[in-house]
Image (tube, rainbow, N blue to C red; front, side):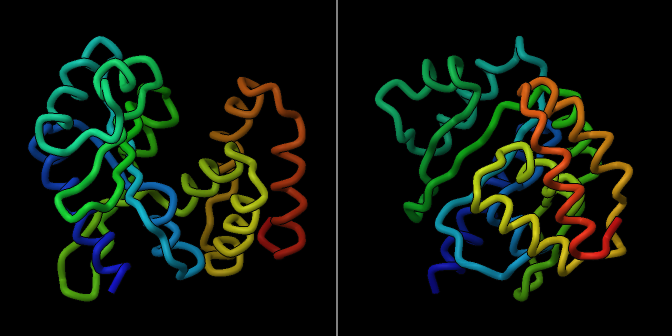
Length: 191
């Protein structure tokens, strides 16, 4: 029942993002439902791609359709490049204002995932989800990466993953991310 609420909220958000007419995709927990472990998620996370100079317009549009979770949602969105809202059913929605080349390409590679009731959500690819999770590099994210590797295995385009991840890891100045992912892929026989 709770998962149904998240799908309902995500579909509501997707409708607004389609109206906005900017490339977008769902990431994190919802994408993990598709590509990794089927586990509970309490919110819907998405990235919408736009030019930085359009951030204010995009944030205003979203905040006009959903309830902000911040006292000054617009100022928060412009400072942190994420719009924190609630769907009509109370489920939290986090929409990153994407502008990095990786985010642009991830939105371009996104595909529709058909839900049991026949509707679909646009999610990032399994490869891009691995990049998101490895870049975040929290222990729970590495567990999610292992689950994606286990489910998707040899279907993954590993060259694409590393081509996207290496520059992000360098930007983050974290030289442990790429070797850790390589080790997990070797462990799962994916490389």
